[in-house]
Image 1 (cartoon, rainbow, N blue to C red):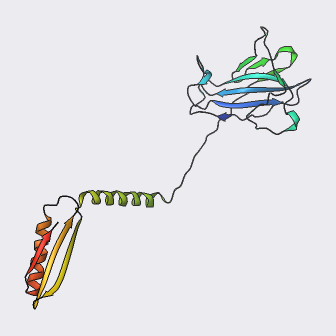
Image 2 (spheres, rainbow, N blue to C red):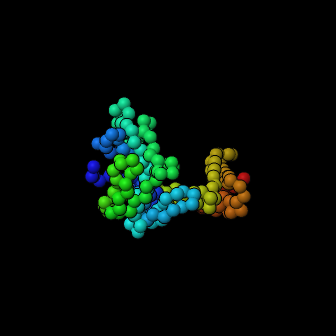
Length: 210
């Protein structure tokens, strides 16, 4: 069997998981599962890892299994290996077989099962392109909302009431003001408005504030 096998990146350093499935192997099918490491190093806690996404020290770390690759004929991901009906291969000491392959390197499998080779690594790039035509509108809306919030905190809110009524042949104009919280300038505003009305109508009025 000789074909390209994809591995799926798991982190920013492109430590990638994948499986190699040899369905034509005899007498039992073979499966390999593990990691592709662009810049391989051995971490004391995480085991084989990658310290950089570029091919500084590429390696393939695999475990080997034999048995039935596709139990009950069910489909499975190309990146995973079902070991439900498979047995892990052992090394000469009886420990689970661990393989670490570098480009161009071949390792013989125990029991005359053949060998596995990492021929080469094909370079590739992942690109992410995004276009969001509504971001400017969202920015304008956010700025407008912020400006409104600032205005509500800075600008004093006032209410001015004007009442006009006839009394003993006269027209009485009353002006009142209401503010939310303390507003020292409210009295001046009420008096100025009352004075302006009096000047225009030639009448006298009274003003109050609350």
